Image (tube, rainbow, N blue to C red; front, side, top):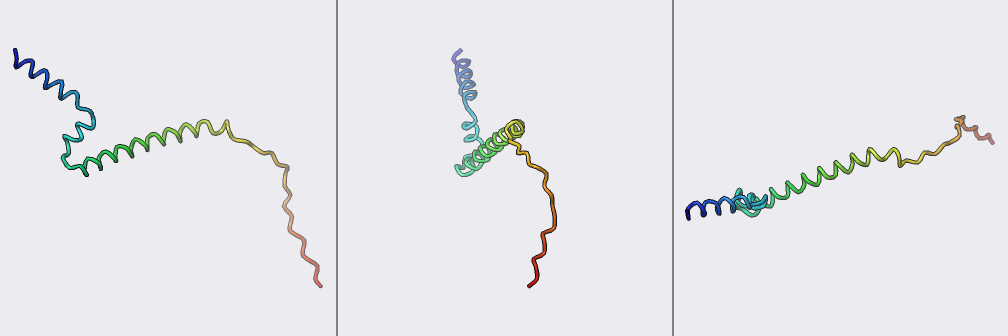
Length: 83
């Protein structure tokens, strides 16, 4: 009975490990842990920025201001008079 209780407690401890706990278990070197962690942070920021850009692209046409201009006539400039 006591062995069953110990096994259940060990399973609970293993389940309590979050992403950082798994990272510590995966790599013992602190520098390598920070490299992996920073990579995931960069990927998260990249996905977040992509979502912001996609949202801005869908709402941008409604926010643009159009200026109407009269038709322009393009004519050659007059030559200056010779002295």
